[in-house]
Amino acid sequence: MRRNDEKSLAEFRERLLQWYDGEQRDLPWRKTSDPYAIWISEVMLQQTQVKTVLGYFSRFMEAFPDIPALARASQQEVLKIWEGLGYYARARNLHKAAQYLVEHHEGRMPESYEALQQIPGIGEYTAAAIASIAFGERRAVMDGNVRRVICRLFRFEEEVHSQSALKTLQDFADRLLAPEHPGDFNQAMMELGATICTPRKPKCLLCPVVAYCRAHHELEDPAMLPVQRRKKAVPHYQVAVGIIWDEGYIFIDRRQENGMLGGLWEFPGGKIEDGESAQEAVKREIKEELNLNIEVGDFYMEVRHAYSHFKITMHVYHCLYKGGEPRLTAAVDWRWVKPDELRFYPFAAATQKVIRRLEAEFCNQPERRRSAGRG
Ligand code: SF4
Image (cartoon, rainbow, N blue to C red):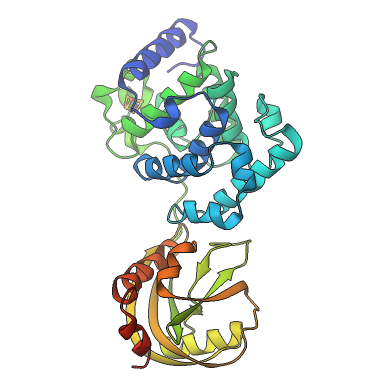
């Protein structure tokens, strides 16, 4: 693609829009111009695949059909619906932003890119997506899919995350944008990146804009682009947690709002230190962070989980409560709950695997609950 050839640009836009018109996937957020629904879908789609988002999107919209409904909900209700989708700051920020919109904009989305960016948690990308798709504003979006397509179309061979590279790519995107159909054009670029111009093995033979693609015509393999920073090795932590039992009840605590998995509930525990066994780590963490005395019982299960920047292996133990009043140092709340009440609380994905097994084994089986944790 040569950036200053007006005729090519016009043809490029037409081909892309025609392709999008005929080939776009049937997705619920494409059937609406409701800026709220578009906002929710865009936030959910950040870092998450479409097939995962589909179910969450419909449940979220059913639970909170508009901005005032989201603003009225408690943070725990919002996190419960979001449970398992990951990157929980997104849910907390959506909730806060809905409250801001009720307070400052009568519960409606403002209609310009500039005003959208004033909303807490809405950055350039989301503002451009809402402004173009819901309000027809001429703003080119730049997400990972669009960035990849543009790098290949223009054969852009610099590392893509530097400030100057991002600015150049945004200039390319602004130039390409179809001025009469900015929303459809943006969605078409994202769709092309998601379905045809994929990170590995792009399907160039099916690509509607292959004629304009420099990477396809000039490089041995267009998948060499974009040029990425070399990734750091992902650390892997060993974590030990305790299911603390007392008379058929289980102790859970809620994490601080800020930070990783903020606002979610958990079984207490923490990282295993060098030279320490998993059982010792459970006992130490629970004493240090909650002031509870426990007896560590049977090993229950191991859960492996990959978060965005690290991996964990979680070693889970049944434990028996031996005394002590909860004193919170890292957590902000705590409860004793029955196993069949765990489902009412939002937990992280790794802990949900433990909960599913607990529910299968301990719900509606009171005789087993009484003996759990005693080894
Ligand atoms: S021709 Fe291939 S590399 Fe170029 S935009 Fe299309 S799918 Fe991507």
